Structures are given as structure tokens and as C-alpha cells.
Image (tube, rainbow, N blue to C red):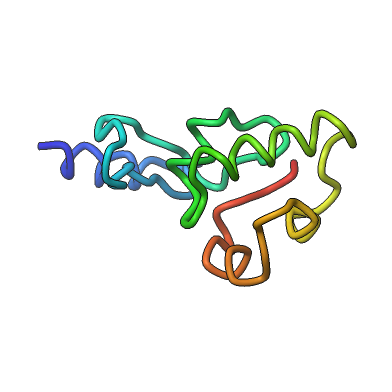
Length: 98
């Protein structure tokens, strides 16, 4: 039933994509509209929407933007300790700064 609901959401105009959290140990009823804004996303949103982002990296992303201000590009995320080009590549299209 959940997959039918997601399919219906994808068919609605104006919604670019929908992702259902399926990471082990996460809330399986959490729906995230993609792309997520890395300047406003919560720790939970970052963890569930982005591949390779756990609690520590999500906290590091939030700490970085609180210390330095909003990200001006998705590529700037590579300046956060523990996040490299591979993480950016795996999550291409899932993030925005707008």
C-alpha cells in the first residue's frame, strides 16, 4: 500500500521526486521530497535522504553551516570533514542550496 501511495505522489505535478527512507534502523514511514535543501534540512532529513550520511556527518553538515553560514553550492559540502567527492557523486540530484 505504501508503494502505491508513493507512486501516486510521483504522478502529482510539481513534485520532482519522492524518496521513502529504507535505511536500516530508520523510520520507514518517513517521506522526503527531493532534492533537499542542505541549508535548511534537519539532521533526520540529511540522514534519511542522503546516501552515506549518518548521524555524525549530518551533525557535521549542520555545524558547518551554523559556523560559516549557508552553503553557496552543493559542491561546498565537500569542505565538511568526512564528506568527499564520492558522497557528492552518490547524492547528485538529491541536494540543492535553494
